[in-house]
Image (cartoon, rainbow, N blue to C red):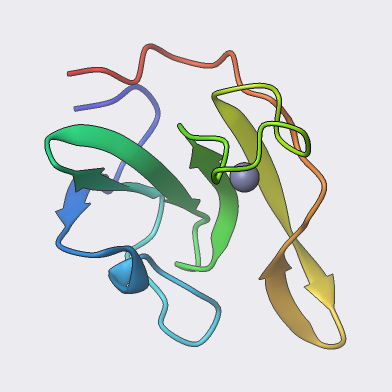
Length: 98
Ligand SMILES: [Zn+2]
């Protein structure tokens, strides 16, 4: 169990299964997507199951735009929908390996 996730940690089979505004997850849960055994991205949900944060463990193949790995994007209310912001900040949170 990760610290602070009362809903626990779930693995998803593909990146499209990560929770979104329309496809909500469970409350306070971290969803992890592994590709070829490597953690590629995580998404963390709020109390209502809507994502609040994405964590990316790759540079999206674009080291110029995403020089820092891992980095995080917040989810923001944009045009009435919660969406992943294109802005990012370095991620130095908990130890995400397990
Ligand atoms: Zn990113």
